[in-house]
Structure formats: structure tokens, C-alpha cells
Image (cartoon, rainbow, N blue to C red; front, side, top):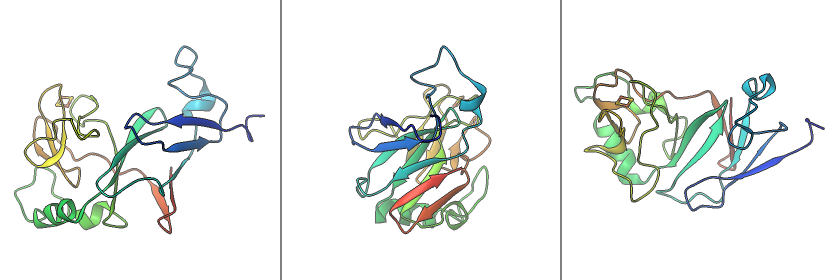
Length: 171
Ligand code: FES
């Protein structure tokens, strides 16, 4: 039934990260028939064990991509060092993470909703090493903060719970 069935999704990063969700269908698979039950999908659970330092993976939560970024020391340092920079949407890195190693953000540009590039090593990541939106050129740093517009806001941090570095529950 819909409570016990688990769908397994391989995220498109080359990493074999398995995501189990407590729902019958999935927007990518069943995009012709998005149902209310999918839209209301409350949580997604992601095992973190297979994600290496420096690796970014994408999972779907409530029909939107979420970027899970296991940051390197250099990426963390760059984010913290820019806490006092002239930010478009001022926010400290510490206010955007529960554990500095794990940055988790909704992968939707805050300008007009495109999906920023940067999840793959070969992607352009912009001047601040985070993400680059191909639609109108917004750039985000390694904290997911917008550093060059037209995007007005930082990438959104979704509600989540980190479980001992073993897994994260988003939602
Ligand atoms: Fe990203 Fe416009 S949608 S810059």
C-alpha cells in the first residue's frame, strides 16, 4: 500500500544515492498525473553515508529539487569569511546550516525559479564557487547566498533534521 511501498530514485550526480519515500509515485516518474498525495508528501529521507566531502547531490522534495552539499573545509571557510561581505540578502553562514559540513538548500533560483547549475563538478559555479543560474546569470556562494542578481534572495533552506550524520530528513 502507499504507506509501505518505497520508491528508489537515483539522483543525477553519478553517485548512487538511494532515496526512499513513503508515497506511491514520484513527480519525475508520474509527471502526467500529479496527485494531491504527491503534493502533500511531507518528508524525504536521505542516507548520507555515500556522499563524499565535496560532493553535491540532488533529491526531490515536494516536487522541487533540494541540493545536499557536503562542503569541503575550503568551501566552509569561504562561506564564513564572507559573512561580513556586502551581501544582497545578509545572512551568516552559521544561520544557514545545522552542521557546517552539510549545506542543504532548495535548488530553485529566487529570481524566476530556474534550477541553478553547480551540482556537477563540470558545471559553472560562478565567481563565488556556489551555483550559477543559467537563466539570467544570478550567482550564489558556497552558503547558497545570492552574490550577484537579479535574484533577490538567498537559496531557501528547507526545514530538515540531521540524524547523527547518518541521514537527513527533509520536511
Ligand atoms: Fe535565476 Fe533569473 S531565474 S537568474
